[in-house]
Length: 177
Image (cartoon, rainbow, N blue to C red):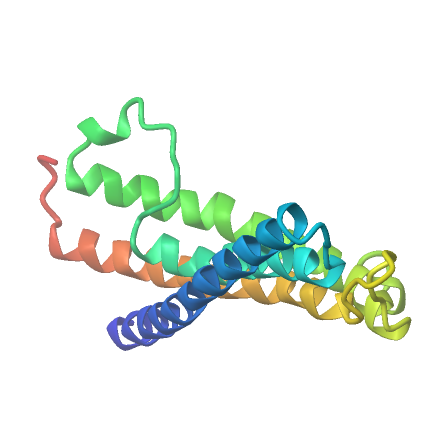
């Protein structure tokens, strides 16, 4: 179990650090777009869409990294007052009953619903979907494919979090907490 947790943590760390570089690229593209639009009086649709696609990739591929580093936003009315053991239970049950089922449902819907041939991602690939805007990016199916991949990475990290909390609870089997 510990080996699996380490492997997933390493994978999430690698994907998160790789995706961080997209932030720099996205900022440079946005700066160029602003300069181009307001100084040169010319806008390039593909660059605007590329910035949107980079943002989507940062969000989707960085979600598992963020979970690994406990960086997701949570409503923290009681959690911060809990003991480490109670926090582990909340994290374990939250991942088990919310994170994984919701992520799996999203993946299922994107790939299988209502049937594989008519699914959101497969249809996009089948038609070679591109931007409807003149001058837009030609391969929108690539960014749509990133959605289930990002949620799959999130499920992997969620499983690692479940195992991590189980290991923690086993080590701290003190009923006074």
